[in-house]
Image (cartoon, rainbow, N blue to C red; front, top):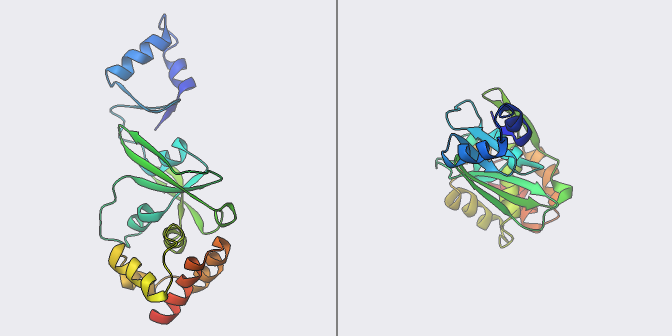
Length: 197
């Protein structure tokens, strides 16, 4: 489980100079510095990377390839944790001792729909539904202009299993796609109805 700077300082209060002790612990890798104010003990194996993703940068939820991998919809192992955020004008990344974390912005009006709460190692995190994760991917690819292009993008490029696409909730896809206000997102429900009715 991660620790805040305040918690670490309380734990080191018995030392003459807690800040100096913390600096030594970071240099010796006794404690891992994930970002300013967020730490993890080196031997702690109880943490959840998915939960830590929301601590590093927020508001955010797990999405894109990380969500698809979580649901078993893509065969590839995903490098790093990918999350969606909003109200940011640029993407963000954190390279930490426990892995890489990537954050991609979405329009605020599409952000709150299609998100569920899950747990890993008794630590909660927010994650996109499969439908939402795919729409997030599509939103970030504005060059998709036709239904067959979109199908190739999802099946060939992203390697999403077709039986997974056929099990998606078409009504949810239709409803959520409207909030993105982008033509490529509106192609997704059309593609599902055409190929996976």
